[in-house]
Amino acid sequence: MKLLSYTLADGTPSYGIVDGGKVRDAGDALRARYADLRAVLAADAVSELVSSDGDELALEALTLLPPVPNPDKILCIGLNYMSHIKETGRDKPKFPAIFTRYPSSLVGHGVPIVRPHVSKDFDYEGELAVVIGKPGRYIKPEDALDHVAGYTCFNDGTIRDYQIHTSQFWPGKSFDNTGSMGPWIVTPDEIGDIRAQTLTTRIDGGVEQQAGIDDLAISIPEIIAYCSTVTRLLPGDVIATGTPGGVGKFRKPQLYLVPGMVAEVEITGIGTLSNAVVDE
Image (cartoon, rainbow, N blue to C red; front, top):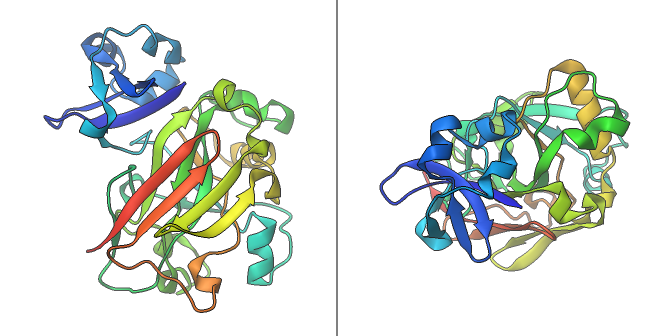
């Protein structure tokens, strides 16, 4: 199943599922019970979307939001593909390097990402994001995938010069509207073994990053277990699992995003997240 959030033509926020080439809206009755997709996940009510009486909508008529527009937490894992670790000259980490983003830093599929006027070092980072469905604390690695609602594409857009102002990544990762997530969440039953999928990032159609999810230095179950040791994971929480080698900062010459470019993150079994670049 593919779950997505969006605004209707009149600006009303809503959510639904992709059914063939159309979107089946949740409808008034479901929205009255569950205000948003995060509430649906918290109530373990995803199956109710299948039988909703909402309208059938054209996908292209909707403005897509991040699939969970209001997560309690967005946790991002740095330096977690072996190819990216090698290009930075670092050693394989023993523990996940975790930083946070805020919901205001993300837009949905088809919505422009914004290069802030204070920097020209706007980089792309294609990633797989895990969305939590079942809450938990001190989750064991062998139980971790039971807590996953699904997977989505993520562009951890980064303002590189602000990222390196200090040892903390937060400034470079939290500018408004610099990252993106979507276009939808694909449930585990539909995607199968996530480790068998391939992530590709294209800039203006050129492949700049490509790696199998099995290249992760710290696995998804290990990441979930570690994060849940620190904080209780809640339905709708997002964990971005890291980016492969090929980011713009380490290319020769460097490749930074400028207005007019289009950044795409494609993951087999999920789909393609696409965003044009504009100036603030």
